[in-house]
Length: 169
Length: 173
Image 1: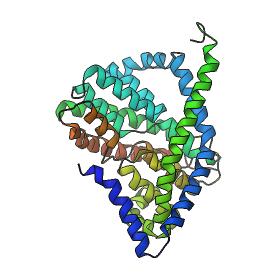
Image 2: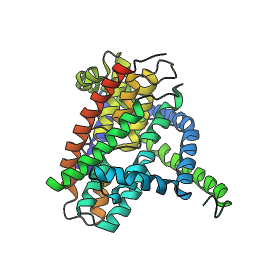
Image 3: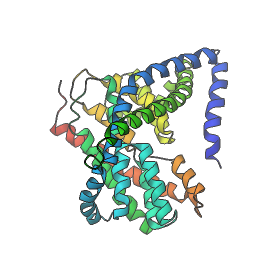
């Protein structure tokens, strides 16, 4: 597997490059770790809030209602009802999307049409709301205007294309 | 749940915040490694070479941006393409803060940055391939090509949509 070697090669060549450039890899790395502490501290409040929100939506069955409401509309676009929870949860949280993908392949099989479409959907989009709350945490932005609708439209387009492409390939 | 078992609400919130905390610990370990490596990239000025490769693409999408911003976006794009997931976050946050003009309205460049992190060409969807392998798929890698095709189309469509929207809703302070 070539992909297994990608990360080790990147890391080792970075360290070697650092030695060639005569910079201390040790002090660079510790500076980076220091920056990651700040990063986690600034993002923590937002992650906690988003998690609480998602968990409440999940447990109160509001998410199920959203799925029920969206199903007919998405069926028209050629997306089977089984994939709707994946698409909705994927927008809220990346790890939730992975959990959802796993339950889909457990039910329908990895190599089934739905299983492959789910794989493409799970691989190709990231959690829109999660990213928006995390990335903009340090800015004053409160009005996202067209940014989030465009991301959602493309996520749905991606799901439509994924369902179509597994029928061809 | 709210009506059948109201006492659950509070414990659900506490459970959620504790799992958020454990996610943050995981994120810290990932960030520590990747930010450490990114620091090496930046002090050896390797990011300028990466930025050079991505410069035409960045100029096409973001228009004129300064060198610092270009290299932050380039680092973000390279981690995105390799499907490194959470490793994109630090450079994304840095790029967003560099593109920030202090307004409470999200500007066009920031919208593009958010879009590129939510839908961008994926060459190596490593998590999904790993899961497919674990579930005994006959060909775990056959999702790579469809994923590249689908994400290329959505990336182009999305960027065109963003451009169109930015003409209608002009950036403001």
